[in-house]
Structure formats: C-alpha cells, structure tokens
Image (cartoon, rainbow, N blue to C red; front, side, top):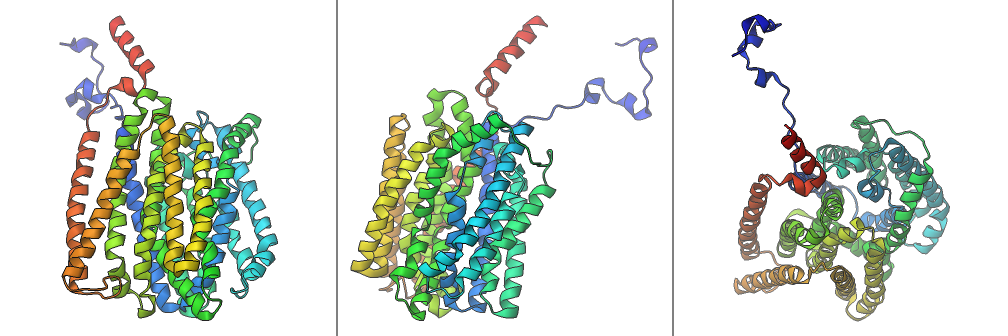
Amino acid sequence: MQNPDTTTPPDKPSDALVSPELQKPRKKKKRSTKQKAIRGTIWSVGSDAVREGIRLGGNLVLTYLLPREFFGYMTPVNTFQMGVEQVSSVGIRGSLIRSERGEEPDYIHTAWTIQAIRGLILFIVSVALAKPMAYFYPEVPDLEFYLPVVALALIFAGLSSTSLHLFVRKLDLKKVAIITIASACIRLSIMAFLAWKFKSIWALVLGSVIFQCSQMALSHILNPGPRNKFFWDKEAAKDIFDYGKWVFLGGIVTFGVKNIDRLLILKVVPDTKAGAAIAGTFAVAVPFSKLPHKIMSGLAQRVLFPVYAKFTRGNPEELEGRVLKARGIVLLATFSGCLAIALGGPAFFALLYKAEYADAGWMVQWLVSITWFSLLATSVDRVLLSLGDSKSVSISLFGRLAVALPCCLIGNSLYKLPGFIGGLTLGALVGHIILQFLLHRRKIRIIPQDIKFTLVLGALWVLNIVLVRLSGNEDPTRDITWGSILIPGAILACVGIYVLKKVKEALKDSQKKEPSAAENPAEEESKKDSERDD
C-alpha cells in the first residue's frame, strides 16, 4: 500500500477513484495483416458494389432518357480516354504501394509531380489525336469535338492527391470508398439532369470529366498527410521509372486486352443506324458482364497487391499457401457474381430495360465467360507485381491479345456476334494459361484451385439450363417465365448461403491473434530481450 504522505494529491476529485493503471493511456491495438486484409476486402467489395450499383442504375435511367445509338457512339470515346491513360502508365500507384520509400515525403511529392506532368501531356496528346480518331470512326458524328472535352478528365486525374494510393498501401480503404462513392453520386446526378433537360449525347460525354473532377477535389480534402507539391528527387524518380518500364509495356497490352471488344464492335456491325443500335446494346451489356471483374480489380489493387507485397517481404516459403488462402476467399465472392450474371442476366434486362435491349440478355451470358478467365488472372497476377516481375504479367497479356485479336475476327466472320465473343473468350483462356505456367515456375501452383472453381461454375450453369428447360421454357435467354426466375434464384440462394458461411469463418479466423514474430521477427526478439533484462 502506498504511503499517504508521499502520494501526490489528485488534480480532480474523480481521479482519486481511478486506479493508477487505468489512468495510463491505452495503447491502440494494432491490427494484423490478416485483419487489415479482411477489413479491406469488406470495404473494397462494399464500395465497388455500391459504386457499380449507382453506375448500372444510372445507365438504366439514361437508357430511358437517351436514344440507344448514343451509347454505341460513346464506345470509341470512352475507349480512347481509357486507352490513352492505360498506355501511358508509368507505375506510380504500384511504386507507392510496394516501395520501402513509399511513405517518405520526397518520394510521395516526386510521384505526384510525375503524375501531374503525365496528365497534362496526355491531354495534349488527346487533343492532337482527335482528328485521326474521327477519321478512323466516321460512324460517330462530331467525334473530333467530344475527345478534347473528355480528355479534361486526364488533367483532373493527374492532379488528384497521392493519398488515394497511400490509403491503399495501408489497407485503409474507408476514405477511398467515401471518395469514389461520393464522386459516382455527383457524376450520376449531373448526367441525369443534363440528359433529362437537353436530350443530348453531351450528357454522356461529360460523365468522366465530372467524376475525375469530383474525385480530385475530395482526395485533397480528405488527405490527412502533407499536401502534395511539385518536387523532384532523382533517386525516387529512377525507382518509379525502373518499376514502371514494364508496367508501361503492360499498359499498352492491357489496353488492347480490356478494350478490344469496344474498339472493334462498331467495325463488326453494319455501318448503319441499326448497327449503331446493336453496338449500343452491346455497350450496355458489357459493363454489366464485367461487374465481378471490376470488383476483383478493386480488390486486387487495394487489398491483394499490398497484402501480397507484405507476404513477399516476409517469409518466401509461406508465399504459396498464403496466396492460395487469400485468393480462395476473394474468388468465392466474385464467383457468386459471375454465377448471378450467367443465370439472371436475361431476366434482368427483360424486366428492367426497354424491349429493344432484350438481346443484352444473351450477350451477358456469353460475355461472362471472358469475365471469369480475366477474374482468375487478376486475382493472382499481383503476386508477380509484388515480386517486381511486371515482365511476366506483360507476357501473359500479350499472349492473350495475340490470340484474341485474330480469333474474334474469324469468329465474327463465321458466326457473327456470338463468334466474336467466342474468340475473345479463347484469348482470355490462353492468357491465363500462360500466367499459370509463369507462376508455376515460381512454385506457386494455382491450377487445381482454378479447375475446381471453373468446374463448379460450369456445372451450376448447365444445371440451371436443364432445370429451366424442364420447367417448359425452350428459350431461357429470351422467354422470361416464372421458372426462369425462380430456379436461378434458388441456385443463387444456396450458393450465397455457402459463400456467407465461408466469409463468416474467415472473419472469425481473422480475430485470432497472430504471433507477432510472423509480422516482425526482429521486433519480437527485441521484446523478449527487454523482458529478460527486467
């Protein structure tokens, strides 16, 4: 017991009632990498689902406000903007996430300087290419005026705060979610108003500009760290460009891989207003079919990449097991999305869209096969990037493009649009097989996991077709009956319950305390030495 004479009188009467141990400031409990990954996955999937829901809902509204051919005309506009940005990628995001200097102010400011200069250069290049693009796509009226306006989005993207990338590095995705969802809401509100008021294609043209401007402003407002400024650190710039040289090459190939369907759709349909309308239906179907891959891309960039980077900086012998475990949980969620689109796509478009969009139902069922193989690749290619091997990723993408380009054109000449989609699917499969081989050389064996998920997805899709036909529906891609709604719903409900159970187990497992030695062996050893000295 303490001597009352030596006890310091409390500043406040209430302090005397509090134990000295409780008066000590509590240390904030540090989350493990596993807990951060689970938390990040929830935020990433949740925010992407909300954002894509807003976008799809907005597209649905816009299809009632604007003519169908407008969406076909916007295909090369949006593709051009994404292409210029992807082709000129220098790996700024990846450098900030993977580099040991990624949180140093000089490195951050140098990265932002490169990003801002790049955005301005891309705008100038876009303006210069407007006329040639208009010549290549005579089907699109006034294309040379749309492109310079859309290119303004590249300037705003270049001026966005690097906090967007640093939040990802730290797996702190709450603010990223706030920024992206708020920007999507602002974009949709303004686009819907312009479409309702003016019935003009300019409502679609201005969409990306509004989104990037909103995201730029919010990224600086919510930036907790030092404000970005123009600065040049020679070593930091060298590190970024050394990493980005293969990312640059990969960006060129990635653009072709991701947008080959959009680039060619106006060339494989008749050069008429009816052909533009078909392209418009295709343009509405493609984003819906790619929804699971969009979510996976968000997970790969914001969760899997930083998690894999931590794994590679840790114990290399445990890399394969950790990758398969983390990837398995993520694949479960996106597997459910692909299955939902494959089973429910026709009913979705038949019930919610105008009758002229009915063909989008069978289109998404074909397109989801491309999405699936792309999803398998995206869920694991970040392992190679975290190891600094962007070259292997570029090789797999190049192989995919080399197969997809001739096969989709040959398929279109033989079987029209279904053959076109089939050729793209074959390219996606070949690209992923190359990636599997390159990973196998590094003793990361994903083939059994891929086969298991693919067989289950195919079996459930075939089961759905058989049951719907047995219910009396001879053409479930066009004729919507109670059987074509209830049967897919029952299958999806069973799969959903299983997935939720697995996710719940993962969340429960993440609450188990990991040995700190796994996170930082040196720190753990130092702690033990300190305890022995005491």
